[in-house]
Length: 178
Image (cartoon, rainbow, N blue to C red):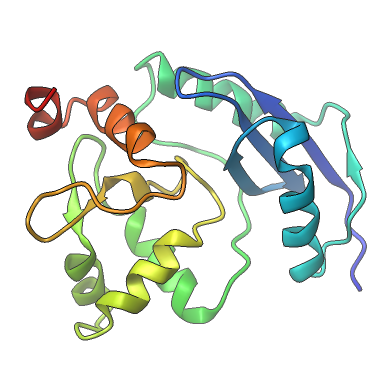
């Protein structure tokens, strides 16, 4: 097993706490919940991706940068992220996650749109599975993916968080619906 130092911290946001994990000077995992809530999940994820299980609650420059950029995002001062990150997943998942990063701030697309973008138009369900396994919540904007009919569908953090994020980005159809 590769033993990387894992730096971890949580920040408070308007949609609740987010836990951030940095390994090898790259952001590798961001998930909803406090450090106490996410510790078992983070350890399982790290073990599955051969990163080890030791979590250090120490400051790290990349961790600080991630916290700052997320804060700016929630203050509507940032529309994209400039962070070093590492994606741990299958080749297909990484293709989906890379495609998600092309969806502009304030816009949405469907799972089918992503499937077409990665040249797998029949893989809509598989795209949904990859979106659900996105290791970098908010940084990789899976909240911008909606159903083909324009409805909010599935979100790892819950539909309430998805709707709040879309409103934050001024996605008009979700601002009017509340």
